[in-house]
Length: 217
Image (cartoon, rainbow, N blue to C red):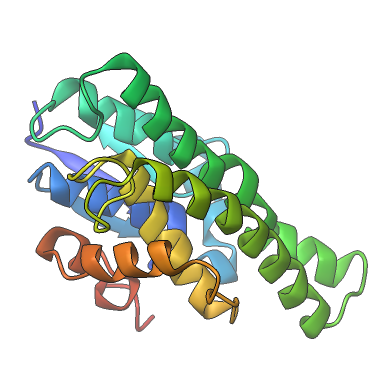
């Protein structure tokens, strides 16, 4: 089923970063097609015909195209269930999803490139103000996530329980963004420790933005 997987990506997109981690964790082989977001390549007619939202990532699988990182990762989880990214027990699954959604819905969108560019271009905000905006939302979201992870991590190396879950897949790329924007992470020691532990894993490390083929483009 997974003979031909193509991930449409951009090296510094945290959403694409999530998809790469999940694909690596599942041990799936895939090709990459890069779309340089800062140059607007995601708005080309050819890409919009493939993915009308014009976002990355998008995954080509079985002759179809999936957008949105969460839909992509849930598809991989349902069609390639081992190793799992979601616990078996329903309450634990919901807890993991809640952590991932906290990043996907409450933190990431407010630091998205198109949102930040709107602040720059339409509201004429200086770069310092734009970066302060991004830091505010990342730090606020991480404060809540830190509390949840302290409650549910069993080993201090994973967000929930003692194994990799969807929450970990979402944490690491957002931590990358936090470092890029100079966020104050001193109040989030649990997240910092978990991020460091996860980035030591080969599957997470191989998904790192700077290691992607288009990183130097």
